[in-house]
Length: 462
Image 1 (spheres, rainbow, N blue to C red):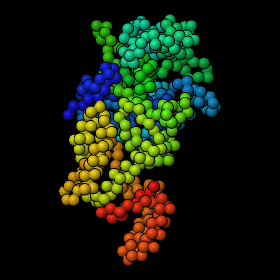
Image 2 (image 1 turned 90 degrees about the vertical axis):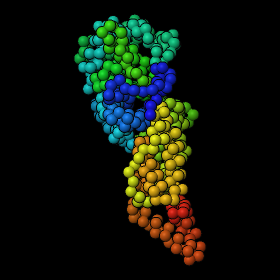
Image 3 (image 1 turned 120 degrees about the horizontal axis):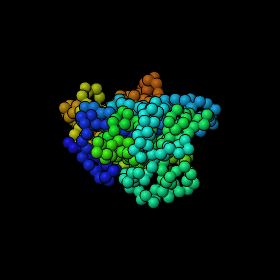
Image 4 (image 1 turned 30 degrees about the vertical axis):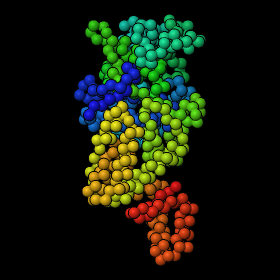
């Protein structure tokens, strides 16, 4: 089946085929100065599903997701705490990896390469030198700036009007800029800031040039897919396009395409506004992983189409948890049937249709419903294999049902609860309804919900 993706460069859904035998993908990663919020996790989760799809389809993938470890926000955090820059970046880079692993961004869902900006200073300097040599950048007062006017196609990704793009830039324009829209590739560093030797003095790179240099170093001068949050489309991704295409040219002098497909995920809204650190309306992944089943958070992030906004709330997480309760309950009822997980074609078709995870989740629910109604051993075995296979490509339903329902509790407590349920069943059978009701009330007070099914009584924690 054909893989079709919405390309933000052309504003339409297009058939995807890689340039070479192995597709390449770059996803913008975090700036590591604090814990990331759940909105920052949407890209790694949904584009991780795309990474797994590409690996299944083409047998391999070169996937890079960067770490920005030199930035003014990092400098400010280090200064506030009175610690070395590396103490901040090392701590929060590790925290980010742990948070993403908690959300299931591991294995086939994770990047092959995790380049850090500070490890690519020579690549950054070399690219800046290429831009200067080509007349696309200039040095001024220890800074190096990209000349926006040298690239007539500037704005082709975000499709913003040039006057609109320059309106904000006209406020307090730095005197060393030739044009208000020119942006920084390199800036000088004082002794209290991180800095590296360069032809323009001791300094550090601007944010945009870091991603361009890292993408070229690991994926080549033209990559198949570049992805990230829609909030990065301008100016970050627009500037990446300009500097990359001006640095890399064909023999005839024409610009090489930087990224063939641009994919942007929508923002998470929280409390009626876009989730952002500047607004203070954030939910940190680090905290959410302590408060909720991690798989419920992952399910919630996949519940809306990646290009659409997603309204984040406790109700969404609770709904996701309840859905997983039902799916895991289905697997529990199917018992110890031995199966080989098999990805249903309808799931693969949904994901091949511009990564339609809501449709894929709807198909998972349908398969589970069919499994609950199946009466033959062959049907139950087939549907269990499909349910596990569908979950596998989404990063869901890979726990043992007992582990899911027993999260946060000991096996002794599970055994105690089951013993009470068995005692209640015996009391009902002997028509001791007072004892049966007392046990039910006791379990309800402990947050244990009972559900009578044809396969017997199931229980879960509220």
